[in-house]
Length: 278
Ligand SMILES: C[S@@+](CC[C@H](N)C(=O)[O-])C[C@H]1O[C@@H](n2cnc3c(N)ncnc32)[C@H](O)[C@@H]1O
View (cartoon, rainbow, N blue to C red):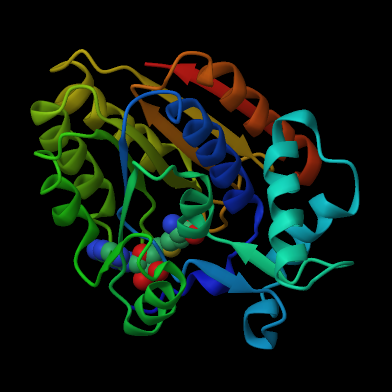
C-alpha cells in the first residue's frame, strides 16, 4: 500500500468531508447511543510541520488558506474546531495540526457512544492507536469486512467510508458493503467519500448503487459534488463527491452549502458545488 494520507491531510477534499462529518455527528448526537465505524481511519491526526508531507502543498492550498480569512458559515464549525484543537496542541498563531476523521469523531461523541476505526498500514495504525487510547477500538483489519460485521450492534450506526482508491475494486467494495449493511440494518447512516476525476467512473458507480442498493431498499442517497475546475483532465483530481445514505433531517441543506462553499473558497474559475438526491 503506497497511499499515505499525510500528503493529503487538510486539503479541499478533507475540508468538505470533515465539515460534513461534523454536521452529521452533531445531528446524530440528538438520539440514542451511536456507534461510529471509520472503515479507513488513517493516522487520526496530522502534523502539518512534517516537511515530507508539506511537499504536496495540499494543506497550504486547503486548511491553511481557509483559516487565513473568515470561514463561510457552512465551514465555520470545522474552522472553529480546528482552531480550538490547535490552541490545545500549543499552536496559538498558526495551524500546525490537522485533525483527521478519528480525532474529529472522538471529540464529538458522548459517553454512551462508541467508535471503531480500521487501518491497514502498520505506521498509521500505531499512531492511531496512540491517539485513540481507550476512547475507542482500533483494528488493523480490512475496513469493509469489519463494517459488515457490526450490523448486530444494538446502537444506531454511522459508517464513514473513505478508501484511498488505489485499487480499482474500491468502488465495487463500497457498493457491496453498503448493500450488505442496509439489508441487515435499513436505518444505518453512511457518509462515503469518492474522488472526482472524470464523470464516467463516477456515473458507473452511481448506476451500480441505484441497481444494487437504492432500487432494492428504502434508502435514499444524497450526492454532493465539489468541482474545483471543469472536469477536462481525467488524470487530475478535479474534485470530490460525498454520498450520504439515510441522511438525518436538515443535513441536505448543510451538505449543499458545504460543497458550494468549498468550491467557492478553494476552487479555480468555473468551480462549483452541486447536490442531487437519488
Ligand atoms: C483516505 S485515508 C483515510 C483518511 C481518514 N478517513 C480521515 O478522514 O482522516 C485511507 C486510509 O485507508 C487505509 N486503508 C487502505 N485500505 C484499507 C482497508 N481495506 N481497510 C482499512 N484501511 C485501509 C490507508 O492506509 C489509508 O490510511
